[in-house]
Image (cartoon, rainbow, N blue to C red):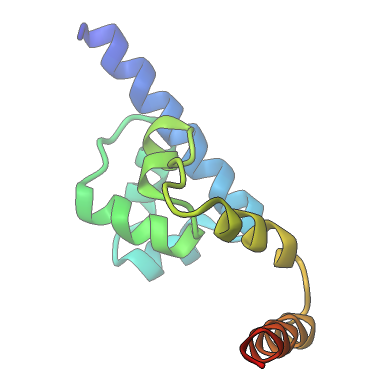
Length: 116
């Protein structure tokens, strides 16, 4: 991989990190405090001027609720579990906790009905 490719890749990662932070409405100073870095380090990472350490990337992944794979590549990891789990995750996304609890109660009802 050439130096230009490395620079392009670092800029793409920087853009995904900046976008994720802005999506949550957090400032660089707030992220710096959460990660334990100076704000200037976050500025450097988001501009592509500073390489990001693996431990920093893992912390940011957790804060931004995005996978490390997404932050590195821009692609979400493929789900390898049963298809019905992916369907259920999509089905309950955006529901209130009360609604999710109701879905769980309905699933319990269906299991009990099948057992009888």
